[in-house]
Every structure is written in structure tokens, then in C-alpha cells.
Image (tube, rainbow, N blue to C red; front, side):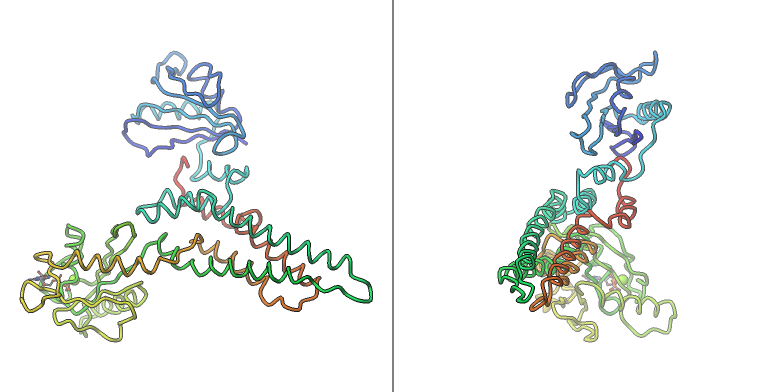
Length: 420
Ligand SMILES: Nc1nc2c(ncn2[C@@H]2O[C@H](COP(=O)(O)OP(=O)(O)O)[C@@H](O)[C@H]2O)c(=O)[nH]1
Ligand SMILES: [Mg+2]
């Protein structure tokens, strides 16, 4: 494989910038700048010279193939974080005939060299995107190979079941077919159960990864935009006493005590003769229905029953206007808003309590295929049973990207940054 290189740190001015190379020849490429680097995995402080031109003093190191992130020979330079230095060093490598890496190409090589399975790759992508504690924790489990280890356990169950089926075929008398041992069905029922647990934990895990959507809805002038702004501690939405001000849906992404939540500010729900406002209201209704939860806000404490779903929250607004509204919130004084966020957090936390490891649709589909293969196997003749076991094992191979990964690779890696 050709040598690829990229800046691994975000481009721009910083304390330190890291450039990384991968492929056979990475070490000598860096040595051409830094002089001899005898030992792998040892950090050297070196002057970098492009011929006679001193470029920088930098820390450099390299990893031998088989002992690096990508599985290939890898070298890394820690430069002073000035764009002009980075530019010169990148240009030097390009002039040596090396190639700038594409987005995610280092990780792609790690996958192709068997350093990571596809679920770990997805976990790494999640980790790089993680914004909240819950996302970070989940991404670390996935990128740390937990699904791969679980999958190995499932595979050994399938291998054991398969061997038992084979032996019942081998020893069967031509005339009297041997029964498939009960243990086969016990193993497969156990596996079926374990897969079901993972599959049922998908929705919650996916919510942690992608975040929850909470729609703030209610009549015009209820104070929806003011509440969003109060939570944002800045003006994200236009506020006015003119009903019908908010028309498009405005999204506010917040970290709710570790959970990623997108709050949606929507057009006030009312009949309107204004064509554009009506479009806004229709859109608000659709988005609100699809959201994970609706926060119904009004001065009166009423809500539109056609939009109410189990688990929604009903809140009265403008507590400061009327001392009788004890349980109401105020976006002017801030009354009740912390409690409201606390309540929201409790409800959403409850929804992720059964979260499993599987948080990507691709992973879910493989598990569902595996489960389907070993469903309704009672009474199957040994050949069909062996076939079902092979299909289940195939699905687990797909889960880890051992087969059928090609169609996913481009999608996964284009969402990675260059340099990862
Ligand atoms: N006194 C008081 N006025 C509020 C409060 N929240 C919003 N308002 C006012 O109510 C009007 C409508 O607010 P807005 O946030 O645009 O409501 P929306 O149409 O539901 O988005 C504006 O004049 C706000 O200043 C509140 O908690 N207390
Ligand atoms: Mg509004």
C-alpha cells in the first residue's frame, strides 16, 4: 500500500499539530526530515530540515508494521502548531511521492488489516462525534470491541450446536435417523434469548447515540420561543408579542445532564388564513408527532389532545403574571425551569435504561437476521438445522464486517475526519 499522510489535529493555529503517515516507507520519509530514528515506539526530539532549510524542532516517533493503529508502518510528527510549518511538512511528503489521506483512510486501513472489526469502526466514529457523557461511554464500549467479544461468544455457541448436529448425522443409521440432541435446541434457545435482549435494547441505545428530540408546542404567544431562549441562555429564536412569529422549526441542541437532546421550537398551533403560517403549523404538527416527547406549553394549562402522547409533559407558562400559577414556569424570572429540565431528564433517562450495545441500524439488521435464522427450528431435520446455524453464523460475520462490508465502508468513512 502507498504511504498516506494527513494532519491528524484540526487545521489552524494551535499549541501542537500532529501529522501522521501510514504505509511502508513512512519511517524513512520522516527520517529524511529528522535524521535517523533507530528505535520504534520511542519519541525523539529532532530538528526537521528540508535540505538546508530548518523547518521546526519537533517530536517524532514511528511504529513498526503489525504494532500500529493501521497495522502498517506508521510515523507521527508533533510540530509547533503554526499552519505554515504544517504546510511545509505536508508539502515535503507530497514531493517525496506520498499521497494525502482521504477521510477515514487510516481507520479504513486498520479495518482492512484486521486491526478493528466494523462495529469497532462505528464505535470509533461515534466516539469522535460524542458530545455528551452518555454518548462517550457508549461509544467507548463499542469502539473497545465489546460487541465483537459478545459476538465471539455467540459464534462459539453456534459452532458447538453445529458440531452436535453434524455428529447426529454422521452416526445416524441409514434406516433409523438419529435424533438431534436436545442440547442443540437448548443452546439455540439461549442464543435466541441473548439476541432478543440486544435487539430490544436498540431503540434506547440509538437514542443515546443520535440524541432525543423534544418538541415545544402550544398556542401562539404561549412563550415557547422565550423558553427555548431561556434554556439556551441566548437568543436562538425570535420572540415577539405578535402571534405567528415563529414559522420555521428552530433546533436547539443541549446536553441535558449527559443526554443529547434537541429542543424544537415550533410555530404556534392555531388556524390561520396566512398561507405561510399555515405551512409552518402543519410542519410543526408533523415534527411534533415524530419527536420523542412533546412539551405542551400554554398559559392556561390546556393542550391540543390530538398531539398528546403517553409520557408527554404539560406545563403552564408566564408564572410571573399570576401568583395563582404555582406549578407554572416563567421565562422571565426563570421560575420552575430547572425543575422542568430535571423532569425531562428523568423521563428520558428512564427511556434509555434498557440500552444495549447495538446502536446502529446496520448492526441491528445483522442481529435480526441471525435471530431469524434460528427461529422456529423445532422439529427441523438435521440438514436444515445445520443450514440455519450456518446462516446465523454468517449474519454474525456480517455484523463484524468479515463479509459484506464493502457496501458500508464508503458511507462509514466519509463521515470520518481526514487524519483519522
Ligand atoms: N411575563 C411573561 N411574558 C412572557 C413569558 N414568556 C414569554 N412571554 C412573552 O409572551 C410573548 C410571546 O412570547 P414567545 O416566546 O414569542 O411565544 P411563542 O409564540 O409561544 O413562541 C412575548 O411578548 C414574550 O415576551 C413569561 O414567562 N412571562
Ligand atoms: Mg415562537
